[in-house]
Image (cartoon, rainbow, N blue to C red; front, side, top):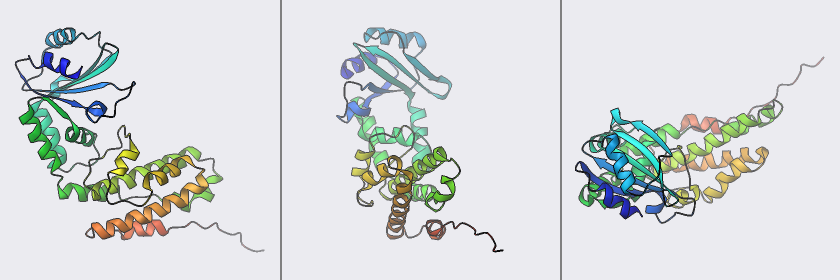
Length: 278
């Protein structure tokens, strides 16, 4: 189906490249999966051109549209034979600016990491030479980006030191939020150490991501799940242990990063005050 759709869009005179992205490109799709096509143009098609290509593809009415035409991109979804097809239309200039945002300016906290990781695993359907050039550029993970990732995510709020205090304050939702953010931060640090693109935006397939980390604490996926799924009394000590092991990996593999403040956070413990005698 992807190749059939690509053949229709490839006829557009300003189109430069098409890739199949997402689960279908990686061989991970199931009966709930959509079909992700990214189409790159010198200039975006007009609305009537998009409608004509959608109809020629056998597509139904749009399910939804995210429109940033002024910025050089739009995303539309429509059904084809029962499968939702999500087509991202983007100018080459916009895509190259997006790549530069991460690869040259080393921006950490952006969903663009998801787009760059998707490009690494994308299957070219048109414009192979252009796509392969982009993939080679994305594969060259900048050392400065790796360090920026580690510095940004190297923060573990010491919830384990406050659990008894918070337990008496009906703060279950805040505790869950803090545990989840800490788990995400551990993954972010490890992504930097392993030169992996990473964003918390729609983060899925955690076990597969963890399996690709050469530098990581043992049984990482299992332990991260324990942090957010087990009772909170057990989650705190597990988080403290994982934080300590992650910090040790930073000190071993990226010694230029100062870890002293985080070490102090890991050691923090809250003690209840005692009433004065008498």
